[in-house]
Amino acid sequence: MHFLKRLLFFPVLKNTVLIGLWIFPLNGSGQLGTQKKQFTRQDTLRGTLTAERLWWNVQHYDILVEPDYYKKEIKGRSLISFTVQPEGMNKKMQIDLQQPMKIDSIIFQGKKTESFFRDGNVYYIDFGNFSFLKNPKATPGKKPGPNVYEISIYFSGKPREAPYPPWEGGWIWTKDNLQRPWMTVACQGLGASVWYPCKDHQSDEPDKGATLHILVSDTLTAVGNGRLISKQKKENGKTLWSWQVKNPINIYNLVPYIGKYVHFSDTLIGENQQKLSLDYWVMDYHFEKAKTHFTAQVKPMLRAFEYWFGPYPFYEDGFKLVESPHLGMEHQSAIAYGNKYQNGYRGTDLSGSGWGLHWDYIIVHEAGHEWFANNISSNDIADMWVHEGFTMYSEALFIEYHWGKKAADEYVQGIRKKIYNDKPLIGPYGVNEEGSSDMYNKGANLLHTIRQVIDNDSLFRQILRGLNKDFYHKTVNSSDVEEYFSRKSGKNLKPVFDQYLRTIQIPTLEYEIQKANKNSGMNTLKFRWTNCIAGFNMPVRIFTSSDKTKWIYPTDKFQTIQIPENEIKDGELRIDPNFYVRIKKRI
Image (tube, rainbow, N blue to C red; front, side, top):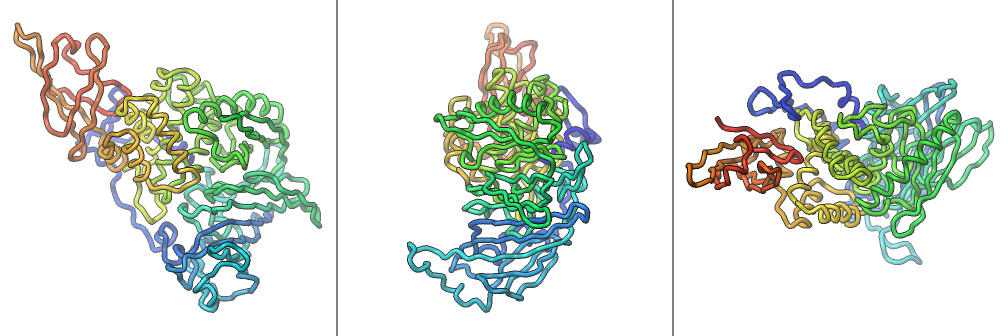
């Protein structure tokens, strides 16, 4: 969710003119911000499925962390269970751990190994001496299948401190309103390797979930993802809190929250009469306010999202909001909440339509990520629009569920004011680089435009639900989602996706009207798409003078149709504003 700083605080780009809802660059083609970033070898190691990553598949993370609040240091152990792919076997394993954190020791299959070395933010473990890895066989007494190996990596250091969480992430060391220690982590994009050793690539979520053990002073409470499985008193005034997630999890979502928390709970009877536990961990001085606010907000949100997207994806792990010192993050089954118990985004409506003040932005947006980001995760953050575009659009669908379609349309049209068209929504692959922050507002408007093209709201809802069913707990590429929409809608949507995801050009409908002869009663309408990719052929809905709608089918070549002269009001063509396009009349 780390885009919102830009939405509120970045100025409108220079050399732009605002016309209606649209931002028009004055430099013709509009190719702003296309200067290529220079990537390093470390970027490639971070963002690519290297040979040292491909041969092993994470099954489970078991993380133990002990923070030292006053020194701003942590130490712990990352126990990684994994299977291997014999055909791709490599003697070296890549483990990610960002500087200045360091690996202290490694134990593999019960034996300590000294065969590891550092290369920047990457460690390599050399398995050359472990010959039994070369031909893994089924464990005796078990069904045939790959062995599960375990490696324990002990780590320590002073993790990067978050400069401006959640947008610029890291470990967060702060104090609550009563000046008591408050700690957590926000590391989307930056990656979980900022604080513990892991395979830091979104394509490999632990198939069997994760366990997080947090050792803290017994005056504090430690909250993690999933369910609390144990709480043990230890020596020296410490308590070990252990939390478990049973489902696959995107590892930037696995985080501790440590502070003076109190707890209350509720239950939702969800789709198919399933019982979903709702848990809330908040600062003790916010207990009453939180109880009122969350009780009013969470169930209506979940009901709307289950209607549009299908059942909540993590019933086993429950739904949880945890108060955080930063604005919010989509930490799976333990959402970070820091919107100060108010409606809107920090009390404002990002759309300017008024509809954004009817609900708490962080509850709705971050919970929407449980379906898009957590249930369906992109393999590469270059495709992060799949997380953010769908989740931004989930806000409009939430509005539609409770206040109707017109309200949702107004909200989506309103957020266009903060589209910058600085660079494509899809970033470069293999270097851990996301695309434009327009992935939020423009991504939502792309989906709204595609909904108009499909022109069947029931089918559109089936596609959204189908995505969450057919890609349940899976990682995907943008192309998977794009092809799914085309296949299920029965329409070739590839040109539309290519236009909005891979260019910064907003299609412009160029048209002219040739007046009718006195007796014919028919005008000639000439039109085409410009500022578009070759072969762009998206149909568009126009309004007639009586405010009825009519479809036209432009391509990137001029076409002409005959249209009754009384259907075009005042000689101006009007496009349905639910399409994110521009229009230009030829003089």
